[in-house]
Every structure is written in C-alpha cells, then in structure tokens.
Image 1 (cartoon, helix red, strand yellow):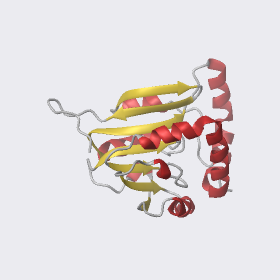
Image 2: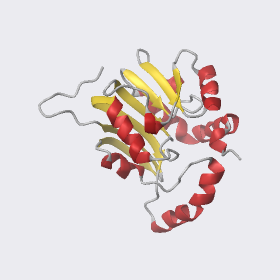
Image 3: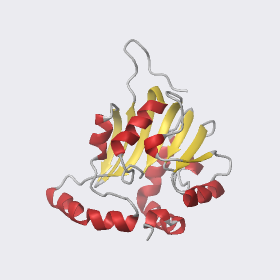
Image 4: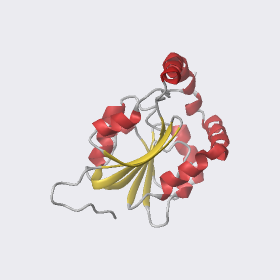
Amino acid sequence: MRGIEQIPWIYDALCAVCERGGLGRWRQWLAEGARGRTLDLGCGTGRNLPWLPRGVRAIALDPSPDAVRRARQRAPGVPLVIARAEALPFRDATLDTVLSGLVFCSVGDPARGLAEVRRVLKPGGELRMLEHVRAAGRWHAWIQDRIQPAWTWVAGGCHPNRETEATVARAGFVIDERRAQGTMRRFTAVVPSPPGSHRRRA
C-alpha cells in the first residue's frame, strides 16, 4: 500500500483544503523569498513553483516519478529531477536558495539530507523551510509519539514528532527569521559565510 503522500491526486486535494485554511499564505512566503539559483527540494506535485518570483533560476526535485509528472503540468518551464534529499545531484556551493515545504518530516535520514543541503548552498545561501514539528506541550507530544508509527505508515513516511528546527541547527545552519503557530513552523536558515567575508545573494 502506498501512503497518501505517494498518491498525487489525494495529496493535492488535502493540500488544497489546508491552503484554504491558511497554509497557502505560508507556502506563498516560502516561495516568494527565493533568490538566484533555487532548488525546490521535495517539490511534490509542484505547489510551490507558481509562487516563485520572476528572475529566479529554479530547479525542482522529488523522489516520486508520479509527483514529478504532476509538477511538470503545473510548471512546465521548470527543470525537474528525480532524486532524494540524501543524495542531491548538484555540485558543491552552486545554489543560492533551497526551499523545503513539508518535506523533512518524510526524509529517511534528515541529518544526511540537511548535510547535502548545506553542501550545495553557497556560503551565505539560504534554506527556507515550512514544516510541522514535535509539539512543545507534554501531552500533545505524547500523543504524537503514540500515533507516529501508524501515521507514518498511512501517510507514506511522514513523522509528526520530529524536532526539525534542532536538526537544522545541528547541521550547522544559523536559524534566522522564524514564525510559529501550533506545531507549524516557518523559518529561514543560512549557511555561515567564512570569517572576513560578506554575505552575498544573487
């Protein structure tokens, strides 16, 4: 059985409902801040791509061929790659921005995936992330822990109880702009520039 995240029409329908409830504004924030050469990591069915600003040189990546086919219909001019976050097919320090919208809850090895993101970003480059995370409240977190195995199976890999912000910080990023609402987070994180250099954005 495939999880709901691997069935594009179901995933799109669920996202559409959530976006009408406010997630759409956060997705818009995620994409509209992109600059320069931008990777939409885990692009899924391509819902971020229409929000990208003019002038951004975008490429999108997802491990699911079915999702990539649907993304191609949504954004036919954007190059699409089938690959995983843990093995990005890009040279070191070649990207200005990486977008990650509801992705790292499902990445098999988040630490390795974030190490790859850091590798391909230029010094001073920016990771823009939208994610749901482990709840701060004790009982809510307890519930997340209990439902996690079943939910991960049904959803096709999603873990509702990951502490993604902490994982990003451990990967060597500096978390910058941040907003929280319940278990949802949106934030930017930068690759520190070498000492004596200035942060540059394309």
